[in-house]
Length: 77
Image 1 (cartoon, rainbow, N blue to C red):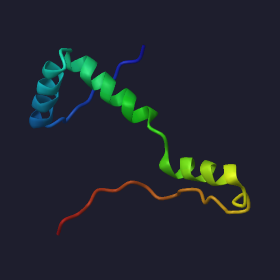
Image 2 (image 1 turned 180 degrees about the vertical axis):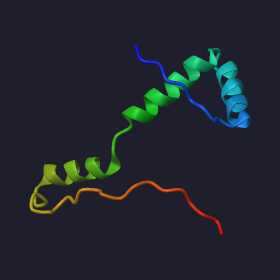
Image 3 (image 1 turned 180 degrees about the horizontal axis):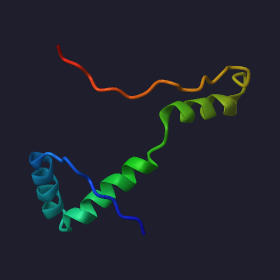
Image 4 (image 1 turned 90 degrees about the vertical axis):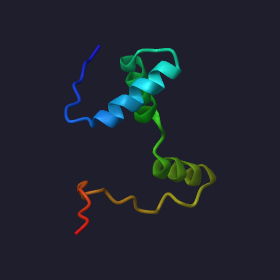
């Protein structure tokens, strides 16, 4: 099983995770594991819609462009 380290986590986030874990009766590590597992297994809405359209037909010729953009931080200036 893999391990990860999260650096730079805000203390308020850590406190909320700890409270959430306590409320659910599990360790903070187990809580974070559950959150990450759920997030990683959520379906991609775009692909789900494409597959739904393909199941009824008529959308096979629609292009699906590749994403080439990169995530970037928002600047509030």
